[in-house]
Amino acid sequence: MMPHTSAHIEDIEVRLFLEAIYSRYHYDFRGYSRASLKRRLRVACESMGYPSLSALQGELLHDETIFPQLMGYLTVQVSDMFRDPAYFRGIREQVIPHLKTYPSLKVWVAGCSSGEELYSFAILFREEGLEEKTMFYATDINGTALAKAEAGVYELDRIALFTRNHRLSGGTGSLSDYYHAAYGAARFDQTLRKRTVFSDHSLASDSVFAELHLVSCRNVLIYFDRPLQDRAVGLFKDALVRKGFLGIGARESLRFNAHVNAFGEFLPAERIYQKRGEA
Image (cartoon, rainbow, N blue to C red; front, side, top):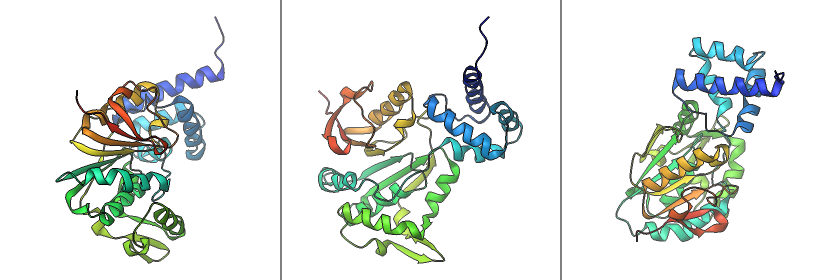
């Protein structure tokens, strides 16, 4: 019999751990990139004070308060307002003229994290005169991040970068018009989210919930394995209207996706695709 290496034992632990999460809490991380998950789970064990993943699993199954803490390690919460300004400039200058032809609009920010991208879109659509006819859907699987997104409060030391990004994205006003600064934090105008639905939604297990004109899901697919990437893009394809738009992250591509033929490259450099029209 071959001896089990520590790497092999870790693989077993990770597989059993993800099954335990799915069985106990109905969150499905089984299709996430294993290399990335392993790194994050090692950090979780160390930070939370568990000698092994098996030890953490035992606590996780019996103590419901552990899971919200763990979600902070399992989900990546890195974002900025108007992150990758050229992406938002492409939306503003090339996609918005198409969207203006619709009587009403629905926009999905999938994997919205703590809300920076949602507020970026809300500001952009306000500046382009589309806010009043648009419904936004901001979804994530991390409840703590969703709560932060809904609050719309960010550290004041991040505002300089947000402001620079907004300007480079073609912003027509001053970002300071949209927030109030107090006590070391910036609180964004509550009216920016008056047409937003914040909701828990998993690209791994949930289904389409609306007919959409634009889906922005950036820097999420990179953490999925190939079958889960196919599932997620399949959801976007099914949700989008004919000739609707899909934006993904700068390091992501549809090139090897099962649904690549459903999309044409609209702005390739900015990773913005358009759903093909029906034959």
